[in-house]
Amino acid sequence: MKNLKPLYIIILLLIISAFLIWQYGLSSEPQIDNQIIQEEPIVQDRIVEIKIEPNSTYGQLMKEAGAEPVVYAAIFNAAKDVYNLTSIRAERSLFLYFDGETDEFKRLVYQIDSEEELFVVYRESCRPEAGQPLADIVYRNATSTDQIEDQGCWEAERLPIVYEIKEVTQEGELETSLYQWALDNEVDVRAILDLADAYQWTIDFAIDPKAGDTFKFIYEERYRDGEYIMPGKILAAKYINEGAEYQIYYFEETDENKGHFDENGVSVQKDLLKAPINYKYITSGFTTGLRCLSYFSLCTNHRAIDYAAAAGTPIRSVGDGTVVFAGWNSGGYGYLTTIRHNDTYSTNYAHQSKILVSYGQKVKQGDIIGKVGSTGLSTGPHLHYEILKHGTKINPLTLELPPGEPIKEENKERFFQEIEKYQDMLNQ
Ligand SMILES: [Zn+2]
Image 1 (spheres, rainbow, N blue to C red):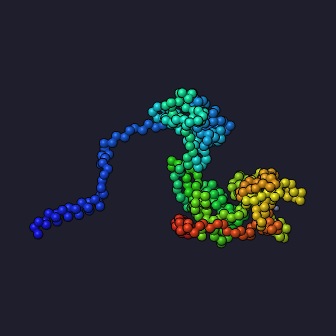
Image 2: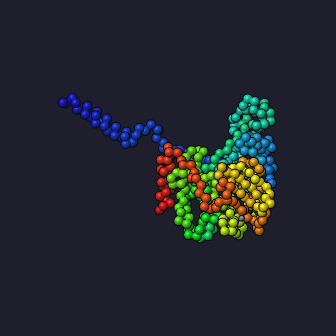
Image 3: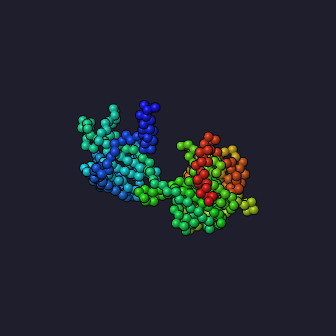
């Protein structure tokens, strides 16, 4: 027994080391003493902001900023395959970055829209590809092919803007309109317009909402460097319209199929939109806004809905289809467009000031097809809108369309998992 004692000690030591490794892990990284590290002082780049004035051009602005023609031409050529710099928009800015140490011009940044930015960056080492025209890769200090050895060049790319996202919940009860509610409660009106867009197959916000309707919605707020920029996606919403509840949830089934779905995973998108005028034109500054002048009525034989809107307000096709009439109607409709959507439905848009489509043209849902006017038998600017089912005028407000596409079985579990949190928040 005596000679077994060292074995016990070895086993005990093994157990202790196994415990220590389990507890603290094997440390292969060298221990760094934070005190010793000297931080290199970072020299900030110098940033020059060029505000784009109306009617100014890219070349003109760059010249005024002191850039060499060869440089801004090089940037223009480098960018042209991803973004045409002749399309820059007034009220935006071009940002020029100069190296903090050498003060060399090294980057141009332009915000294309709310989603993307153009970066044109100077690279120290890029070589022309065989056969690539010199004009496409104009070098900063070179004017001929011989000189471009060891010269850098400009390269362009579009990059998505990464916002910081905050999720916000709002709820309320309707008194007059959603738009007015947003103004009264200091909610970004753009979020309300996005909400109305998400419901554009379900609710006609010019007609359907009634005082006492209640709603709750969760949406993204987008920030950059801590500063509020704009609303992002509507993540979830519940609108109770005269007792009928409509829930919607944002879901990305695939890269192609993303949008809003009801609580059962059925897409809110239908063959026809609820209204031929986008709710956003209620905000265009007229005192009356978009509203309904006259409903469908069998008694008065007004088998249409009249939308009051300022002359020139865009009219959209409520569904995909083919233009089967576009022109003057002497029976009182004035400038009239008829769109045939399928074997069952067509729609009429009357009294237009301007028709923007022609006979035989294919249109997509939401395409702008004309402008509101007061032509024909009309006493003021409005859109007279009719839906025909197998050639008979029907009441657009009571029309029930087939539901949208459900998400695929294999994605349903993910859908219900993702919406659970929002469903709980909406029903709190
Ligand atoms: Zn009418």
